[in-house]
Amino acid sequence: MAKACARHILLKSKEQAEALKRQLKDGADFASLAKKHSQCHSAKRGGDLGEFGPGKMLKAFDNVVFKKPLLTVHGPIKTKFGYHLIETIYRT
Image (tube, rainbow, N blue to C red; front, side, top):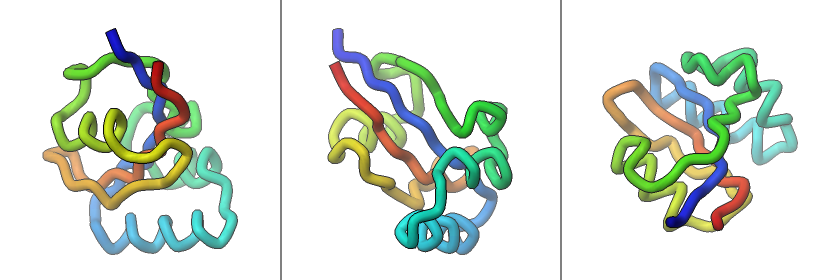
């Protein structure tokens, strides 16, 4: 079965997510921004969600992790939890 490793930053507003995405494009460190801004418990790990398979996350999240290019920050992606910036590290 396919597996992936991803990290994310969960934010309350689309505007906040877009602002952080601009900072990332300008060279900001993903893990540092996640630790400072993410609303998810993964913030303390720099947004690292570890390895997981399809169906473990919400569909909108899975669509990014398992279908979009690797090592690229995607988003903001809206889910019932808020707005995510998602980076897939690898897929197997």
